[in-house]
Length: 273
Figure 1 (cartoon, one colour):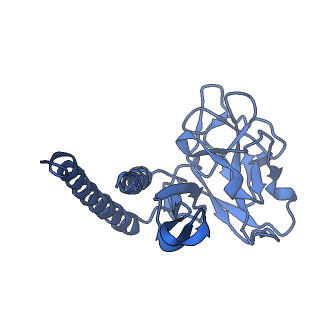
Figure 2: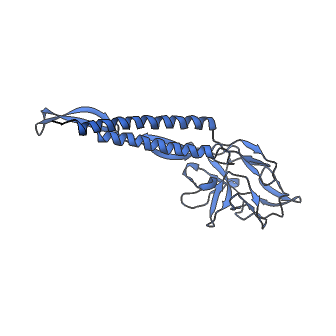
């Protein structure tokens, strides 16, 4: 009976965590460059039950198989969905959308690689993002909405005179007809290993920097000035998944209430003289 409590509780916890994840996706449906999170729910290994009979060879007892007992479920992992979001026109020079082309696939897993803008994080290392809604700070440096510096292809900060600049499809920035920098783009062959941070940022798990996408063989991409990449959250599917998670939580809740009533009856009535 108590094992049933544990099984039902694990289902409620898993569905609650899934609901929180889906709610976060929905809240960021209009965040530029946001990549939706996905989750997988797995079951714990089943327990094989047996009973002792009067016939057998183990201390005069025989083990007779009863069957398997499910021991609950858990949310195994959270995986970022890195597909391209739709482009939205803003007509702002500082907004630059990164557009995927043909990207190499991992030979072992078949996972398609991913590209990101290079940023300088607060600790001096690199962070990565798909949010191309940039701005120019008081010193003329190109930064992201949280003030992190955008790096060029050489890993240096990009300093501009003003917002009157042009960005070509290959990431070259021109001021007064002169090339001043090339926006840094990094490539990850295994994007599922990246750690998702706040504000749409990604970092490598070991703190090392990703390789340059410009030096990656068979990687093609482009940039479009005056546009931003929207989030890749499918709002209709997310709402449907949220309702499904709610219903699953409620179903587990009703089972838990039934167990509670059974235990109450067992304690208060069974064995009463």
